Each structure stands twice: as structure tokens, then as C-alpha cells.
Image (cartoon, rainbow, N blue to C red):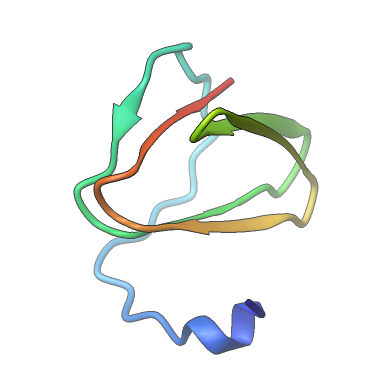
Length: 68
């Protein structure tokens, strides 16, 4: 899926430097995560993904995930 195909309605947005705790979370609504600098490891459904600068990830509500 291409980012331009998402066409999201953005209800809430914030720019923040995160320091994630290694705990499993469940999003109640869809999420879009953009990495502006550095990197993050995203874990979902038994898979892991390394996200680096300028990467964008979208995931649906109800999905268990962890970010480190």
C-alpha cells in the first residue's frame, strides 16, 4: 500500500520524541507512525521491523504491537 492511498482523516497528531517502554500495547484506533530521526524497532504479529528515518508505518486499531 502506498502512503498516498491511505488518505487518512487525522483526528489527533503530535510531534514528540518518544522513549518507548518494551510493553505490548493495543491501539483503539488506526495509527500512523513517522520516524523523523533515529530508528525504532516495531514488533507485531510475531514479526519485527526496523524503522529508520523517513519511514512511515500504518496499523489498524485492535492490533497488539510493541515499539522499542
